[in-house]
Image (cartoon, rainbow over all chains, first blue to last red; front, side, top):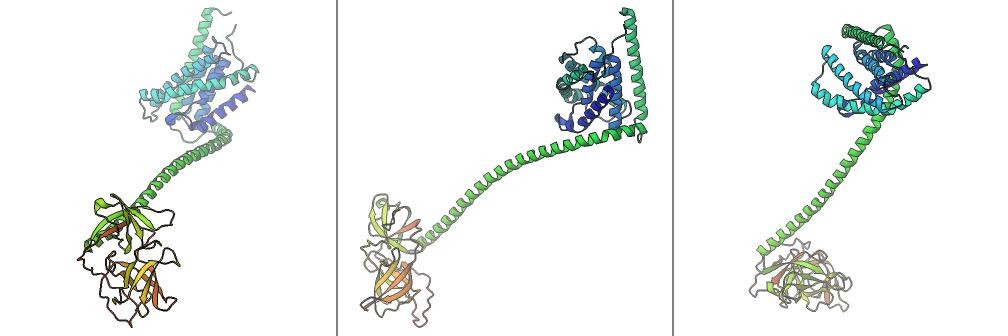
Length: 171
Length: 308
């Protein structure tokens, strides 16, 4: 069931990201809903499952949007894994924690994406400073508030055992 | 409970695995950066996701359409408001322009009349008119300070309209020809025939208030519909030669001794705006005016005199 729900969440996130969210945001800067979902699920599922969730979400994004296979996966995998790693030390019912985490991973993820874009020679007209000011800044805020909206629902679903269970370190 | 050393080792292992997968992904991305087409599993995924994307895209299009419509509506409303304001301004401006054009034409005609006239003319503006219509008087903005005196004739560019009834230093009242109280009759004659004996008196038409008629014409007077009636100069109040009106129809009085004629006034008494007060001159000469084209070939008489 968790697989299906996660897959549906990914698909809906990508569909919303590619349609409704193109209307939102200033100067063509749109939120990455999939990243928010990945971080939220990773917080609830732990590092190992978070890494898998990030990898699958990234690969799906690569496939759906025709990016080089592994491009977005390389960004979402560490986001999921690190979110799961950090989440081992935070209270899951405290919504502000994932909100702050997603802001942090937005910064890291977008910087990494910028680096990858340069690496793969993807044309970008913005300098790093402009990218930070005009893209990362607004997206950071958007993701922060989106997490505030989404996380409580996912937390409730997690409590009802609809999502992946948290994997604790072996005792 | 795990020993801290073992836990740390596990974390290093996890991070190592993570970096390894990351490296694999980057290599994969490098290899697939310029690929053409998709693999079978990708195709299946795209087929699965496409309907969901389509549904959201349709939703987005609807939202976008509504937003665009609302945006356009607001713009249209704003544009409409602006255009209405501009239209109102243009209408006001056009009305003002028309008014100025008409005023200009009137003033031109007045100037021409003043230049052509051998009389001294005092230009004045009508500033008031009896609104009750009981009395046909108007007030002009010139008085004794400007040389206006009682009984002076008042004309417009179209013809004679009346005489000064009362005067103050800055204003004067003009008694119009159509006023029934008129004590001073206007001696008039037919411009076409100009026979000295054919002089009648123009007064308000009692049958039709506001109109004029000429009476006391000799029974044999040569007068026909369409004739121009001008002031004869007799009586001393109204100088000779000013157009009073045009004959509409003629008739014989009850006793059959004299003729009368109803007249169409030359001036429009309902639209008096700028007028002239005529300063009488003893040696005033008649002015040349256009000959009236009349339809009386049997008469054949050339107009001798002149009129304003």
